[in-house]
Amino acid sequence: MDELKLSAKGRAGEQALYRFAGAFGLATAAAAGGSAFVPLADAVTRAHHSHRQVFEVDAGVTKALAKAREICAGL
Image (tube, rainbow, N blue to C red; front, top):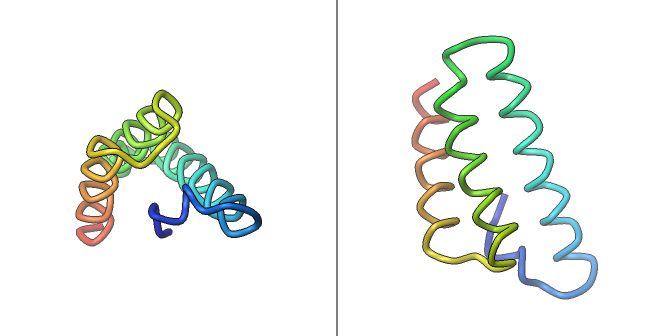
């Protein structure tokens, strides 16, 4: 998902929010099924919570999603 689209207006922004929520849900579900996915779920959760606090893509969201991508690439 492209986190820069989270601030887009209209359908593009709505779609990005759904994708972000989906990534959060899938990462959390994967972690519940296997400990190998816990670091991924933690990173996505940090990004998700940060975004919900500030309602924008700030450095915290960007950093946490970069970490999630790094973890994902190693799985």
